[in-house]
Amino acid sequence: MKPAALWFFRLASLFFGGVFVYAGVLKLRDPLLFQKDIESFDLMGDPWTAILAVSLPWMELLAGVAVITGLLRNGGLLLLNLSLLTFFAAIGSAWYRGLNIECGCFGGDAVTPSYVELFIRDGLLLALGLVLLWKETRAARTTAFL
Image 1 (spheres, rainbow, N blue to C red):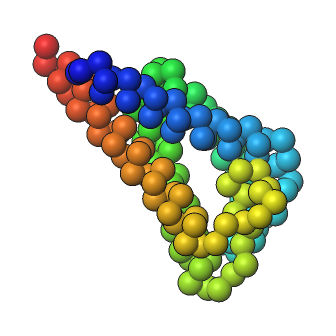
Image 2: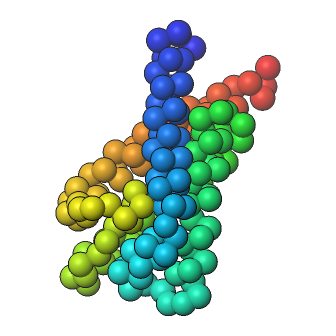
């Protein structure tokens, strides 16, 4: 791989993983607020909202660190891309049902973006995550046969 491409993928991994580390840390600061944000989607009840409010930030934090460090990067990328797809489904469901949600994406944001802004932001993150996963999977297949 050319040095410029290598640097791009390193910076992209740092950015992508860093977004989730940041989001996870913010959610861990106030899990009760994050639980209320989850409840605003009206998709599940107790105890599931509480379990998700405690576990999701840790998954984001650990998977983000995996993407940044390269240790279990494929697993981290897979988890984060699947979570983005799940967020898409939850946001789409809330939008379809006309709910006024609190995103909770970054630990109780002061202002919740519009549905369109959420889809654009998460879509761009998903596109980056899929490119990184494709690159990592392709690199693993290439080196497996050397």
